[in-house]
Each structure stands twice: as structure tokens, then as C-alpha cells.
Image 1 (cartoon, protein in one colour):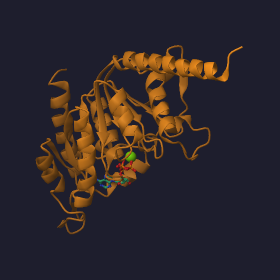
Image 2: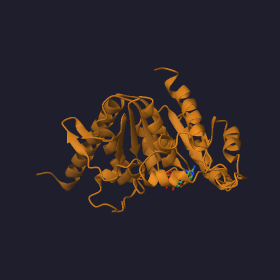
Image 3: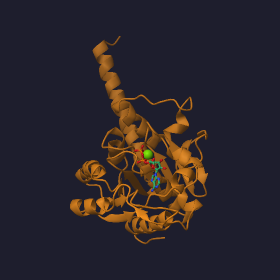
Image 4: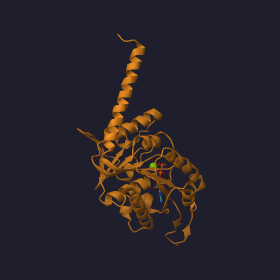
Length: 287
Ligand SMILES: Nc1ncnc2c1ncn2[C@@H]1O[C@H](COP(=O)(O)OP(=O)(O)OP(=O)(O)O)[C@@H](O)[C@H]1O
Ligand SMILES: [Mg+2]
């Protein structure tokens, strides 16, 4: 019979083996995905999920086989924004299958795994890291051209796990608002990404100005220009700005990306310009 200490050593070794196996599986799974882009911000509520969903929808519209993964364990908004919040995950012999949201676009979110809708996730660091790594190792995406990863705010367990587990990442799209208070938090996030030698694809300034639909006067609700200034200061590319538009919240509630619903709106036109800048950086004008 083994002593407690021997059993501890065994279970520690088993744990290490399991982690190594998981690592190998993640590398294998990720090798079927040509490009990986993380969307991040040091600040909450600045539009990361909005940018992620519309970026993924724009890629899908251009016939790129696209996946989007929502690693926001505490506030998984992507399924609702794509109208698939009630989907149930299915299993294949190769692993868990992501949910189809539209032609060329598949989604994976912790939301699909909750036993009860609306149940909160109350996990500490290691459990969160474990859940994300399991996500990455258990799901079979097949061959994808691009995977977009929507992150929760800050520099905590979830973004750090993404940056360390998904390798190589093509880069990070950083979202901010024009406010200095957002800029301060985003600066920390940029420095974390730089510290891990991962490229910053650029900064997007969201909620940048608002044109009144009645009098057409422009009102700078949160100011303007903070994102560009931050990009210059941190010596990272600036991708452009997106205005506040009243239709954004409504289309999201209906589970539809705004670029598909209102392709001629000012925000969609600006977004498409940003997408083409990202494509030039990531796909190198291939395809
Ligand atoms: N340009 C915009 N115009 C109008 N509303 C917007 C715009 N961008 C985002 N929103 C709204 O702002 C809110 C926050 O956006 P979103 O959920 O994308 O932010 P987030 O950074 O992902 O938030 P969290 O930090 O909670 O994950 C949402 O209600 C969204 O509809
Ligand atoms: Mg979000």
C-alpha cells in the first residue's frame, strides 16, 4: 500500500502528465487554424465583444472560415450578440463541436456549458485557467482561416492564459474609448502583451463621438482622439475610430452583427476600413 506522500507524488505526476498532454492537444488543435487574433482591453465595457463579433462576422462574410471564442467566463456576451445563446454543444468522435452562428462562422463560449441559464461562474484563478485550456484542447474547430478570441477586461487569468496558450498569436487588437481613464488601463494591457513579445495589431478608439440623428450635430460624449494619442505614445499602430451609434445596442439584442444589419451606416463603413487594415497585417494580402 502507498503512503499518503507517495500518493501525493503520484497525483502530482499524473497532474503534470495531464497538463503536458493538454498542451500537446492544444498545439495540435491550433495548428489547424491559420490565424489567431485576440481582442483585449485593460478597461471593461469599451466594446471588446462588439468589435470581436463584428470582426468575426466581417471575416465570415469574406468567405474566411472563421471561429470566435468567448473566454469571458463571467460575462459571456458573444452567443447573445450572435443570436445563438440557447444553443447546445454537440460531441463528435474528434471532440466538442462549436456552434454555427452564420455561414462560415462558428462560436464557442462557456455560456453553452452552463447547466442552468443565468448561473454565475464563481471560480478562482487556477480553475479559470483550467477551463480555458480545456476549451482549447477539447473543441474541434476543423480547419479555420482565422480565430477571434474575445477577452474579459484587464490583465488577469483569462487574457494571460490566452496569450500563453495560443501560440503563435498573430496579434492583439486593443480597444479603448477616448477617455484618459480608459487609456490608463489600456496602457497596462499593452505593456503586458508587449512583455510577452506578442504583436499589437493596433488600437481602436470606440465610442468616439456621436452624431445626433435629428440635428446632425456632432457631440463628443466621451471626447475624441485619446486612442490615437495613446497609440503614438506607446508606439503601436492606430487602427481607427468608431462612433457611438444608437443602432448598435439594438442589433446586438437581436443577435445580429451591426455590419450585416446596417452596412451603410457610418460605424459600419469605418469598421470595414479597420477590418481591411487588420487583414493586411494578418493575412499579408493572401487569399
Ligand atoms: N460604438 C458603439 N455605439 C453604441 N453602443 C456601443 C458601441 N460599442 C459598444 N456599445 C455598447 O456598449 C456596451 C459595451 O459593449 P461591449 O459589451 O462590446 O463591451 P466589452 O468591452 O466587451 O464589455 P466587457 O468588459 O463587459 O466585456 C454594449 O451595450 C454595447 O452594445
Ligand atoms: Mg465583453
